[in-house]
Length: 427
Image (cartoon, rainbow, N blue to C red; front, top):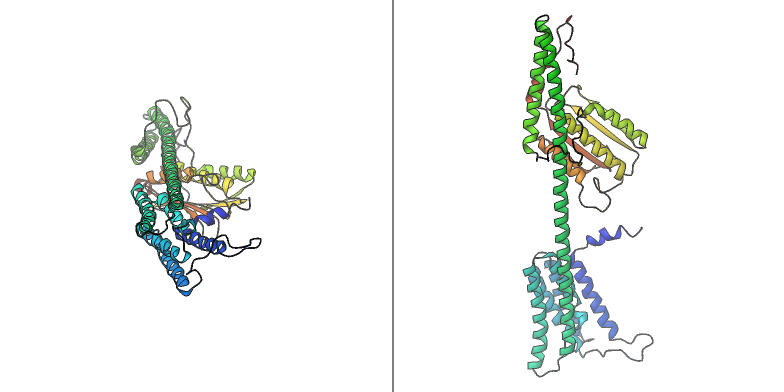
């Protein structure tokens, strides 16, 4: 597979460079056909009268200068560049002493026609083809009107190569458009699936919070006459849990699409409810990944504290997806996870020193759906997301999730000193 890096390098070559290469290849072919090569008694084509004279060499030089100008304009002004290339082809034919524009002199135009049809709209490609065929017809027609010999049959073959070049370029254009449509649809499906999964997880969070509210309310009802302070504390916990749940719903569910009743994104009917995962599970994830062969170093900064469930769940999913990408694509044996608790935001950063490419996808696949899912999660929480190669090598994923103002202002609910906590408050 040593030749695999060659294709990306070839893709970086601009179209004008390919056109220039075709021009010089045609010039070399023209020269070789007019000299006696080893094994030949004479040259296969006799050179024209001007071929070796100073005026013939000057004509070749001028036509090459026109060609280079057309190559520079090809990506910015394709039709103007096509006109200059056609003029260069006609001018280069004069010292050869032939009755038509040969294929060797028209090869650069064919290459330019291919790139124009492949990269430009249909109208521009059709106009370029019409210009090319019209130039051939005008060249032969002019010789016929002047009663000079005209290579009409040979010029028909050259015109056919122009049509074939246009058809190939148009086919590439349609193929690229189809691939782009497929990629866009696959990305949309991945985003919808991610939103549905977030909705299912949010459903679990809400169900878990409602269960806690029910436990606290039941405990308060049992001790309301015997321990009024404990009952008041339990009702404060109910209020806090209710406000937290409603805040999370307002921030997330309004932007999510609904799924079918009783069905989660994976297609399982009536999936059981479970407590949502959070940042407390990062250490468990690190241990499991380290045991699998990729060492995960976790760095905690700031004062660790309880955050809204949807915030912790999204942060954990970002860490989980990033670590999974490191295992699959980074070609490294270690990565670092940094979780920083700030006063106004939670920052999660995952870095590695790997050499792999195509994070979130297989090699050579379409843009990563894993990264798109992480970006979607962060966007729903009004945060900032970045994923790019690190300056010193490797890859870095950073997510900054804002902490809601009520969470920053609200202190953790705790029982007064010397008072027994209400059953279920620790849940």
